[in-house]
Image (cartoon, rainbow, N blue to C red; front, side, top):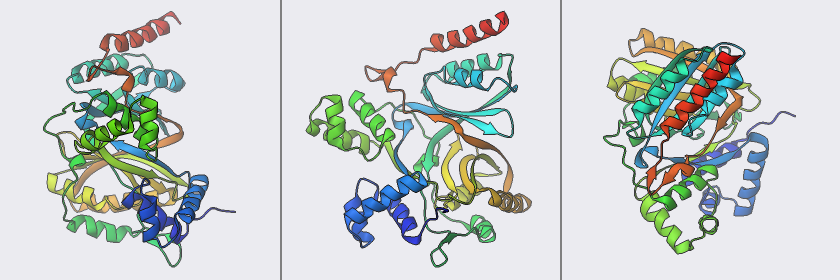
Length: 368
């Protein structure tokens, strides 16, 4: 039997995004149900729609700069390139693409080590099986959680009013979230306890603070102080991400887009129009440019309608161009921040080690 989200399921997802999965009693009150009933519904969503909760770190305030990398390669070298991309310990996300021999990788590089990372990418490009490497320094990312705005509650099905969305984009007014603004600096504000809290929340946002304290071997009082006065007050945590396969049964795919705009005003309108849309997972701004990364989660049949809507924005002179890849989520891996390399309140970036790894791969290929 095909799994299908009901109206109350969508309301639960929307409520989790609004109140957070750490505040179920308040959410249960808002939904007029008992906490026990809410917990059972969440268990069902976990089982049937792969629901999970993760903390979203604001890497800017812990001294890390995000960079999005696209690598084209020769067929047959998928696994080898996969290991190459992960040879730099600061990788956050690596995903193989469908339909073309490409990889998408995201890193969080310590501020001040950008040139060394670019040297790492230059060395990567020298590999015989690598055709091209493109990289884009980015702001931190803005998560977009599921809303019911495009869900027909009476028919209990998702709708996709692309025509209305185009009009909304052209006339949208709003303020960008701080995550989509170029930061003036990348300040490392965290200490070891803060980093460990962030690591645990990124793995599972529902973890109890007392459990983190026990893992770290410190008192709950001390951990709460760091959580409230450092992690929260200093904005090291952007928020929480509620991830679910809410288009289950509609043959959805995940795409990674890069949009290019003619001016900043259009960039703002477009980005603000996506902040409440259920087909958006994540957004990030290319640093210093009017360009936007968007991870799109969409039923396959709707991709054509989405790109037709984008064509209307191009013809209207609003959007300059765009490109995208289709992600293979069965060949995608993520990891938390590289807490193992945080020593004495600083990030340790071993550039020589990463270059040595790539050089050894080149030597190995030449021997073969």
